[in-house]
Length: 158
Image (cartoon, rainbow, N blue to C red):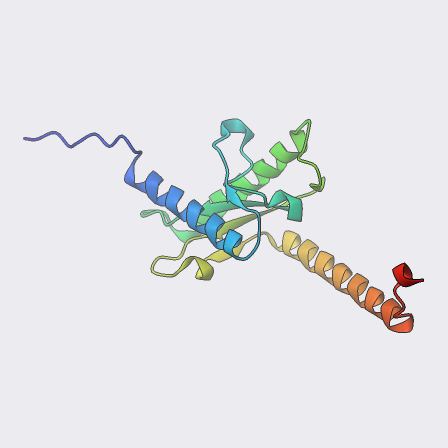
């Protein structure tokens, strides 16, 4: 009987998870977002992607796990998100320009689909916070456009 070869690059599921994290970060970067894979932080975990906190989000990545149903997987993902938010609030020093409040989002891999078709999952209350933020931002942009339409003169040219 032969002994299986020792895998020094991590287990196959860990490598697959790392690849999915890399794919998520690369896809966001290709869309102009300064996201990258986060280093492992253990008990101080802020999920899997760095650079997303500046926009008010902590982003995690969850791959497919055989033997776990979707209900269990989602519950685990949301619990990890809540713990990451708690860790965020415990930080003594936050990166400059990051908000005090962040929303956890888990990117859930879909077997056989490209990264762009993964699911972004958050709790409903967090979703409503996102909708409120977007609505406020759109109102501010509309107000600014109205002001510019009333007085299109560039103050720098006076």
